[in-house]
Image 1 (cartoon, rainbow, N blue to C red):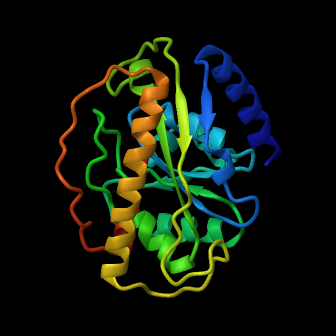
Image 2 (cartoon, helix red, strand yellow):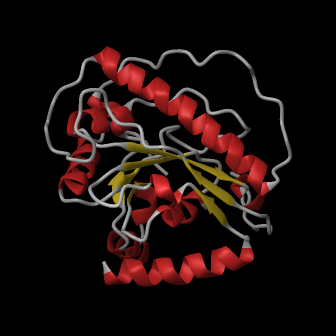
Length: 241
């Protein structure tokens, strides 16, 4: 935990100056209890920028390739990352994620599943809603604007660009006691689908505002209505970095 705090302090201090980071909505972060951070995902740099949400250690799901070397395995384990095999139904990652929440640590899952491009939040996986509904913990939608301009997918050399992190109001599962966690209640598919749809709308609003504040080049995105989310399963909690 001390190692995480040290790394976070060093990295975020540099990032704050270099990328002129602006954080909006910190009042939405619960002062106590656990929650799931659900950020937009346009760059690998979204991981450290999402850490601006809280000084507490936030557990992240990370693709298993990051653990393939001895140093990578040591580093990401010390940082509290949860290894995910993107090519398999990783029930171990689901159990580890649930355990992190039950032990009182916030958890971050990218609900889009992988890095996307463009201004639109596309269909989300149901894993975030599944865990939130099962454990009765709130979801924090977090829009991160500007990272695609710094290091888009497929690029190696970063560019300097302003970044904005917008934290939306927490979304609590219907009928739950916000932030208690650990009830183990199995939700109906319709409840999980509805929670996923709410998350998508809130995340889009936060992402739009983050892009505006970051001065991201405006793009036209579809004006179609947000469809209801697909049916859920525990396997869909495999969202990864």
